[in-house]
Length: 190
Image (tube, rainbow, N blue to C red; front, side, top):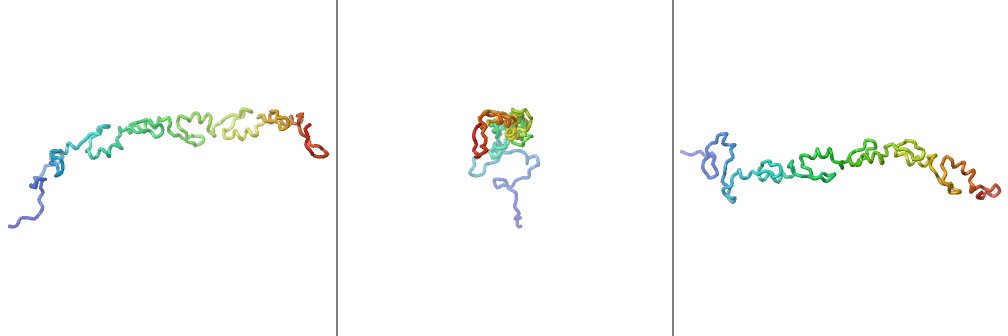
């Protein structure tokens, strides 16, 4: 009589294996190491714990776990403070160097500089002209100074500092005002 040529399940030693119950399939068991490996190493010895978060994993997974370990320290990209990876979101909510958009001018400013920016630098912030005390946007101040009637400017004739609003009257009485000669057109100082 011929034997069946169907493959029979074998264990690692070339013997037919017996069927395992479902509970036996999930139990860790020691296995002989394949040839070329240390003998006597069990599967359970390949389980390691992450030194930071204490999560159990197979030894080969540890290198892949390190870059994502929730307890690993990472430097905040804005302030360089070392924070556990799992606390980065909380740190960013309070990070003083976090770039924050100014609601008035849309510039991005570190959170720690926002008050100074709003009070001193924001072009959309309000300020007052030091000369006429008129309130205006900070971005308009330089243009305003070039026309403000209270700004003192130098008389072109005598170099005296005179308010822009008073310059016309000053020029009428300035003792060094240049006038044109009605006969030849040459400018002379009075």
